[in-house]
Length: 211
Image (cartoon, rainbow, N blue to C red):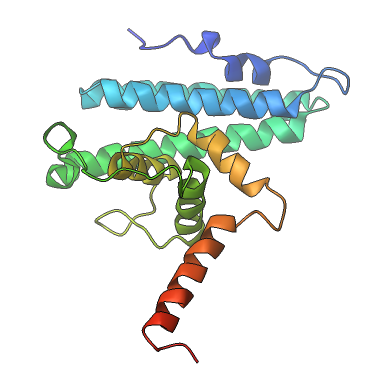
């Protein structure tokens, strides 16, 4: 039995419905995509049977692939935005399937130690806010300098969750927090990274390594 009803997913309804210039809302489509990603991740985290996981992802992939083909035929006003969203969903599902196969092939690298480990580090909110930590997360992710143990590209949510566990914080909506970072005014976009840079320079001066 399916773990979710695809027809109940807002993203599926939006992609499957016709749209015009007057009723098309790209922001709503993006929000629905993010909600869908969250629901899939929640399902993957709560289901332990690999056959069930792979079957559900395969069925979901088939449905969205068929939907993409129907969009190609209809080509309504918002075809391009819908097609891009479908491609993102298909790519996301493929990545999750790859991850599942890696988990089955290399289980020792995916041992869950969360229950037995809790970080002793806490964020001093008088000095750094959640968006400041997200600024660091974004920089590391965009630079692609953090990978999985076998050298594969990580998901943005995995990196953000690692920082949440490290500093005992909760971003709530990590993608919204990411958006807050990249939408800031140019002089504020890397405000916290600039503070870190200034702190390092100040330490260099104190130690006599700064000209």
